[in-house]
Image (cartoon, rainbow, N blue to C red; front, side, top):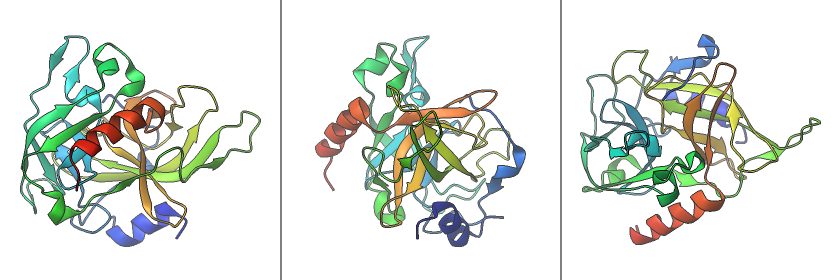
Length: 242
């Protein structure tokens, strides 16, 4: 199945600063325990994360570290598949947090973080694979070039009911210039920071290719899991083997 958006809609019974570009593209997730969504969860009450192994959660670095204040955020738990007051798998405590050293020094292009959980709650929820090096993207045929892929962002927007999960589908565009920051019109809102950017891989499988980090008036943006981000993630994941 090559169209990830269609796959997610069929599987789900879908009834940060970030911005709502067009209200119609966001839809509530009615069954957060379905195979497409149960590995996505809420970090405390203010960010989103996604399981990438039994104990590891991928999110945005600004969800755990305040660059301006140079201080760590009070992040102690992760609740997968949360649906307002419903917590089907309970919560897992955070044991450790990994953030790229360059982000701590002010580099927003490495706005990613990994939470290490005390309990392997991912054995209950499952986890998503990471697509390295623009897997799932195709060459963009416009005069600007670059790369393009259809995909989704799912998380916990702060302008909706507390703890409710919402999905947005759109095209993701990656300019052919460094640092390869994706741009998209998926509707997001504060609370969806850290949400995984998910596209369909070569075999139709769901792959995480980036993390949602910022909102703008015209488009939203995030970071890709390539180059320095790829090296950081692979080093941390190697330290916590399956």
